[in-house]
Length: 444
Image 1 (spheres, rainbow, N blue to C red):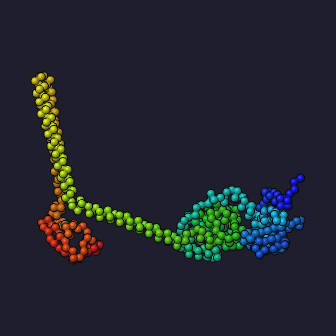
Image 2: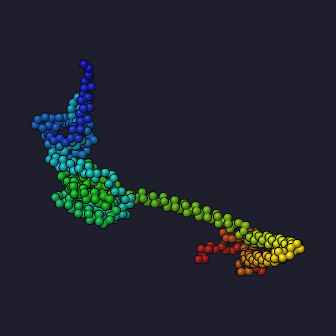
Image 3: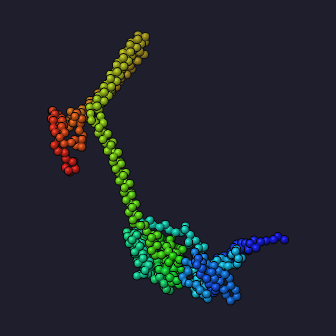
């Protein structure tokens, strides 16, 4: 027979209990006894009924959801998981939720509806609508004159004053409150707002019960408008929170989660403006440098270079035409000699061939003359066009050329007061001195 240590036995029992689904996340009702609030913040107590009792521990992290101070004799409903404390081998419940038994039925209904809607997928992120980046029209559903409304107004004016909000006063407590919220939600949804805020201040589970209504949950799920809830305090959760697109712990937090901070937006706009200004200045400077380079290029500073190049090209074309004409004349003479030789050898066939050659000869002459005349005409047109762009022609049209130190001046910015300049007209030159420089903008 194998000998086991005490630890091995206790550890095995713990594993068996921890793996039993029936004992995990259970709801237990009973009466508190031996209550002790430890200095660490943990709660230690027993829960009992008329037939048995079991020890319980509620760690500090879960106590923030408490809305009452537990004490011996309180009838309570707890949500807990069963396990064994290894150090003592003691069976105990690890409590996550502790409610007064007076609201036990409500809490059970809340858990039932929550599990039912979760099974339908109503809480899945897949069904959550995307929060608008910059909501400018917001529908606010909360009690008129409430602290929640005041908190929302304050947060909006501080954080996102560009938004225009429209208040839909609703009942947030009482028998007809759920129906009132449903009706106002449907009206707001038809208006096409950027977002809806559904909010109210804190309270007990009874106070917040309107927001656990199944029909309200369906209405929120079916909305076309993005909705954020800010119901109660941070520890309060309702069915409306789970089914909404986004849950905030308080009404103020709902505004903070929904809207951007206008100071951040202004900083981002300033950054974009600086970047755009930099790009514009950079592109302008690049274009200016290209323009200056073009203005200072040889063709523009000395237009005669263009004319010279065109004249040279025309000479080249004329030479080609002349060479082509000599080649054709030589070919004609050769053909004539061949014709006479063939006539001497053959009479009629050669006579016929000669006639054909004569026709071809005439066609060649016509083609040469046509091509030559066309080339000459184009040469004349180009010559006239080029002459029109010479500096002499420009001067004859009333323009003048200003130069300083034999350098052509193309901008007033190239001159300074007292500079000596030369002004060339069509019929002569004059010397002058700069006495005043006016900005072109001043003349407009």
